[in-house]
Structures are given as C-alpha cells and as structure tokens.
Length: 152
Image (cartoon, rainbow, N blue to C red):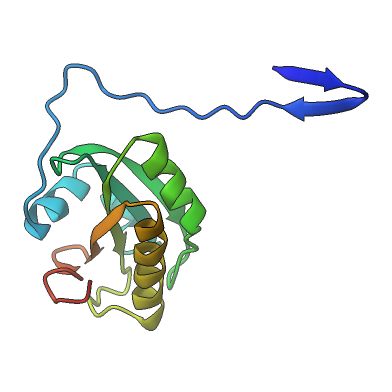
C-alpha cells in the first residue's frame, strides 16, 4: 500500500512470519540436539563447499519456533548482518536464539571472526532481551559448541 502525501510516496513496511500449525515444537536441551536438528535442513551437499550461517529461534520454553538462513558465503567465510539475525528473532517473538554455521575446511576450531560475531550478536541480543544461548560450528561429521566450551 502506498500513501500519497504532498508529492511524497511512502512505502508500507510489511513483515511476515508464519507459525507452523499443529506441529510439536522441538525442545532444545543440549548442543547435541541442536546438531541433530540443523542437519535435518542444512544442505549437506554444501557442507564442504560454502559457509552457511543459520539461526534457530526459541520461545521461553526453549522450543524451536523456527529457523532462518542468515547468509551463504564462500569457502572461508560468510557475511552476518546482526540486524537480519535480530529482525527474525523479533518477528517470531523469540526470547532466545542459537547460531549455527559450517566450516568447509573441516576444522572445528573457531576463528577470530567466529568469536567476534558471536560476541556482537550476544551483546545486541541482550539489548532486546533476546539471549544467544549457543553458537555451533559444524563439519561433515562433528560439531563444536561455544556453550559447551564455556565461550558464551
């Protein structure tokens, strides 16, 4: 819808989130569960090819309300816009989130950039009372959890 006001055109902002009906929301209690969950929709044929960053969004019972593909990058990195991460959290009325990305190199060691973006998302979420509860790095056959390694 466009409103005309003295030769100015103003575009209406429309945001959309559809909650799945009649679906039992999966409750997250461990990094192992997050790893199993992400592999249900992560394009496994891409895990050794390009970095993908996903966010899982949770309600106040730690049940997943949805996931969002934040970005797809190259072989050694991907761009993460914190505003996009938080926009989806707000849109889905989430109180917590978990970030997950892959390392095509097969290494599970977090890079300096991984640590920095985790901290940045964590700080931004705190301002909105949205908690970042974990960040997983996944490879073809394993995963690394920031929370399990006391990096959160």
